[in-house]
Length: 411
Image 1: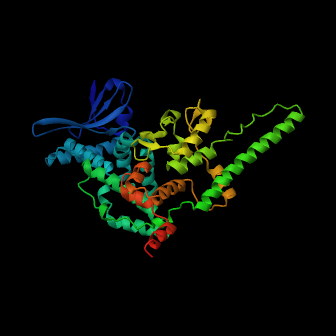
Image 2 (image 1 turned 135 degrees about the vertical axis):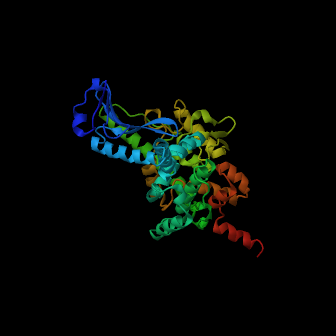
Image 3 (image 1 turned 90 degrees about the vertical axis):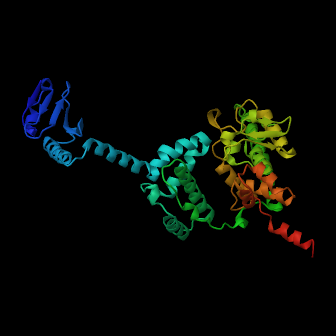
């Protein structure tokens, strides 16, 4: 049954579940409800324009009886002025949600990331992480407040600390992509980040191997292979003399591990490291001399077929004889894809006396060799899996010696 008295900290303290409701004796419509389990909530009941409404003021424990009373007085005053306080509360809540959803971080997490995952699940998290890492100070900003001037200031600071133009462009382009979707989905009316033009990138900085360096790399792989086989043979001789169990011997035509066939494949296909790591034997067709890069492993999100030249096919055939039962061509632990080759790659470069050359530069090397051999850029673009020709121009620029030779043809 309900009671009627002034709602105060004392009267609330004495309230029991069987009371069910306590109506305030001074403020019309102000009341407290108590559940069978003893939970107390404060409400304000009112009439406006012929309709009835009951608005929740809060839960006891989150607010006190005194605070609830003050809120009830305020609401009563608003109703007296003709304000529908429940509608006002809903509008305020919606405005807050709209504001929250239009903040960069919330938009990325709740809208952009789920959409990216439907397009290319493999790169979705990486794309959003790049935006968050690149623009941490903007995450709490509303999308509509982020303008070209803010990005230009950010870009200037990044250049001052030595960040490469290509890296800066990558961050900005990722952000632009998110903003374009926000406009498309009606989160914001428009954006002007397209006014931020990309910084010029010196394509000549893209690394590829000279003929001498390529020969050195090949010799280093061959030497590494031979040394490992000799050490295994010597080690087994030591074990045999002492009646120790022998280690598996290497076949003369067998690779000692993944490194050489992996490098040869990269040099002859231009595949990205992740594409190679995730390559499955089921995607390799040695009979027809080709392999397929699965859409889920491609940066573009689209599958592509890469022809295998003689060297790449030979390397995979040789590697297959000892690894065909595996799912992945280059398998790591627990039948999972290989994760990292940094140590082995670094040691190989030291042996070959090659400096400042990343594994990814083998992709540049592949593209540059194709262009210097007269292959048209669109074919190179297809082999590399690029979206457009601009990217191919960056990766497949001509070597200085090659351009000089071309000029000498008319000298």
